[in-house]
Length: 230
Image (tube, rainbow, N blue to C red; front, side, top):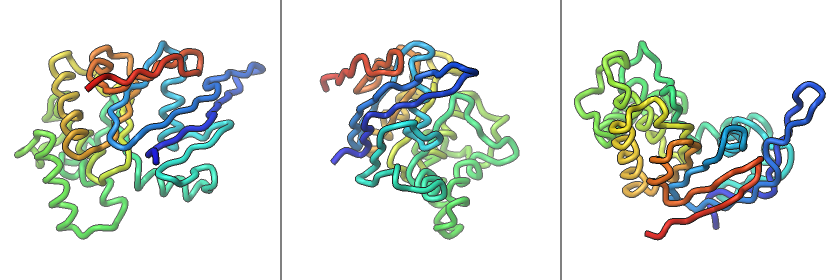
């Protein structure tokens, strides 16, 4: 059974008197442990698709099935709870809270969930901070970090709750090429060691080269779906 299944997903926006068809019948299967990039020119529907996969937006038509569960059957509260528990995001702007330390930023999803003791949250957050290569930096504030280190904190925060899938929107956009390569290596390691599923929305050719599968969108439709030989 696929981790994620999109069935005939459409999305239509009203722009003044004009209808904009952002997605036009997307069918997609994603298995657990994939390292997948969604690419395409501006306006092709990449961000819209990522937002729908992340339950930040709802489709105009079609069905989304996550791990066998039909998201279309959930109400808004149930959908929010599902997203909080199972889906994590990495943004190009990092979205770290400046007054919180590295550890506090990473712990935040666990604090919100309120399902673990303080000791368990501390152990888990320090473990994942070490895993992304930031050992000894738990007490630093975001302003004391480089851009690459901030993105590593964002990755740790995304992974701390063991999500079903991590969605990354242009995760290398604000990084120099060397740092971007390092960040992709960190995510590849997480994918390899933890079997974490990653889905990227990107313009970056380097990200596409690292991805094991590349889906090209054009005018809201899948124009190609390439799985690389391993």
